Image (cartoon, rainbow, N blue to C red; front, side):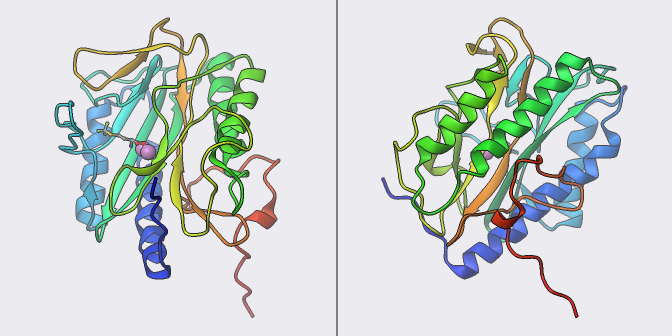
Length: 277
Ligand code: MF3
Ligand code: CO
Ligand code: CO
């Protein structure tokens, strides 16, 4: 297994691509309301990435072996859709939950992130699923530091999600990201502490747990992309791109509209705030 280690200049380029990916979600946020279609959100995101950011939507035409080309510039996964949902003409309605996943290529580097949105007023159960999944992602992020292992991340996410009564999707995982959309390592969202690859400074990968309210089993729809829960229970996902630093981690996919980290996240693990005089 060879996990790319990014150099200083490469990390700087990734900071830019990742900030842009997060800013696309900021731009979409006010539009995620009852009545909007996911195709309208796709157009807004596409225009922003291409015209404002001078970037390229990584998902548009993306075609891993065995898949048809992905037909849109974002993924929109609604309710029991787990991931890779294709934007369409159906208006979102009050109470829906939707994951919007944005990957921007800027100067050849990929920034990958997603957030959950509750459309209008969601049920308490739906909001809890989104909140627990957000905290589960962060439970994984705070494990990131040199010397930790990938299994530490997976275990932290799995134990937290399962203690809340939910299940973790196994078939999809986080991934190394850089010049390539998906590269080594695979970042499982379940596992055992102390197992798998040791983290080293300069690694960049996503953490993007998919958490189901019901059973963990999934199936693929006939469009060749959309993944849904087999039992049609609700599913949530959040995603950040994370750098392993000398002392811990740096979340790269942050912008003005990023939700604040949960209270259990130590401020000290973040890069020191710039001192202004
Ligand atoms: N952005 C997704 C991820 O987090 C991948 C989407 S691939 C697509 O890895 F083709 F479905 F868009
Ligand atoms: Co990803
Ligand atoms: Co993504």
